[in-house]
Image (cartoon, rainbow, N blue to C red; front, side, top):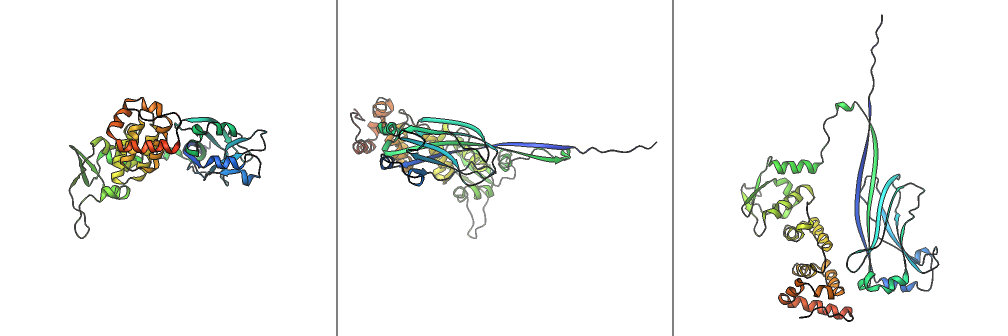
Length: 363
């Protein structure tokens, strides 16, 4: 009797689903002049459509997008402003996109919000848009176009699905870690550390090579000999609490921050001191998200003290446009007493913007 041996080839199909998300803001200054230009005519597409700079989710499919603002679109009888998403160039389609677009008003709140969720194929048309009558924008100019600027926000999530076939999958090892996971393991386990940093009464151990690559200004604090060779020892970071520095180290090692919104001011101070530009920008975005009538005076002082021109004017405009509400807060009364020079700046802003019927500060 002849016995034959048989082998079964096992194929494993692996499907990877990854999400890539980006937030984009498009500010159009002098918007009223643009709307007035097309008040009585409908030009061709080149004359009546504005295009934002391109942005991407950063996915492997190479997607690129832009926002379009069209005035007096011929699809509508009434004069309208249409804000749409459009793909730029060619990339691998068949991906799912989740898209949200909105207008940010003078209180940095989302208005005229639209949402969509669809699989985008070659022949698909992105049939969703913010549609708002031109006269509605003009009648609510102080709300939608504060300081003659229209701010359009967009959030795009691209879901990328890829499949691959693997033979003999059982021979494969454990799940591959991200390099940042390996870095944070090095930090937590204090494995092969070669520098010591003292903050207040707490000791942190780290790696020269990572500090040199990710935070040169922190690395430069460590002493060296005249010939440039390194000297073993420790440094002390003054004027910083250990909790904040612990978060700074985590950012240096992982490029991520947990609970940013709860500690944005302290983290900004540290990031500014150590010239961590990305973390600095993340903190500024977090501060703007926390802007309310109660927090506005404190954030204005913070922006003034650090000469943050990128957010100072926005916060000042917010205070002026919400003068009656800001004036009623205890925080504002304290602000007035302690910061007379800053009050003068806001009073001048009131004059420049001609805020009718509202006196921003009452003693």
